Image 1 (tube, rainbow, N blue to C red):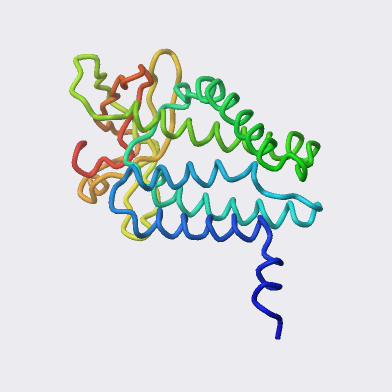
Image 2: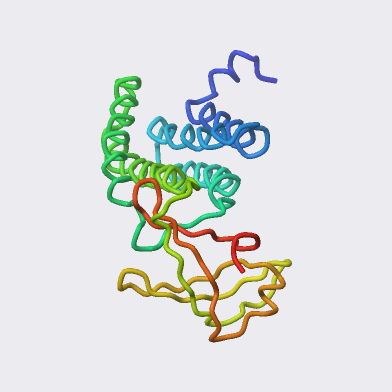
Amino acid sequence: MRPPMQLFRQISRNHILIFIAIVVTIYGSFLASAFYLKVYSIGVLVLLIPFLEIRSHHVVLQLFALFFICIQICSIAVYDRLPYELLLSSQPLKPAFKHAFPIALASCAIAHLIFLKRANLITLYAIQFPLMLLACTWYIRMNLIMNNCRHVDSPKAVYIQAEVIQKCPVCCDIHELLVSFTYEDEKYQFPVEVHPKTFEQAKEGGKLNMTLHPGVYGWPWYHKEMKRRYK
């Protein structure tokens, strides 16, 4: 049996980061009492990416697969349950990228300074920086969407009649209609969840009343679940 000190010396930086990632994932997904704590937990996972120690391509796949799983679990608990969605033409990718680039670069620079003697500049800036940039862009984009889609009464809200293209098959007591409409000379088509009675009454080619909200930042959005708000 190995002495405790020898076992302790075998614990690497990656072991510590993986342990932190698992703890943060469990806390953010199941234990956090406030919504903002769930959001911050995803940010912590993203910020850990530059501090991983990459020694081989095999380790790269294992580490980032694990972190991707942790981030995905937290995102399902937070973002995938949000009741609103932006139009495709309103996705804030450019502003998210502009904010993400300096954050990703600064995070990699901090990791470089902390592990100055052991840092591999090639893997840090050629592999981890692009991954960090993608993760930061995605994270900031989702936060911009959440801030933009706060429901406030506005005279700029647009009331439209969407055309029902088809009734989607019912699955797990989820009733969805595939609808289509034109907004600002662009045509949109997507499924929306509706009340079971609305689903029964709907006919292909019929109309569905919808509301497009202007958004705090001016990006139009709609409710994904129309069980109570629409008929």
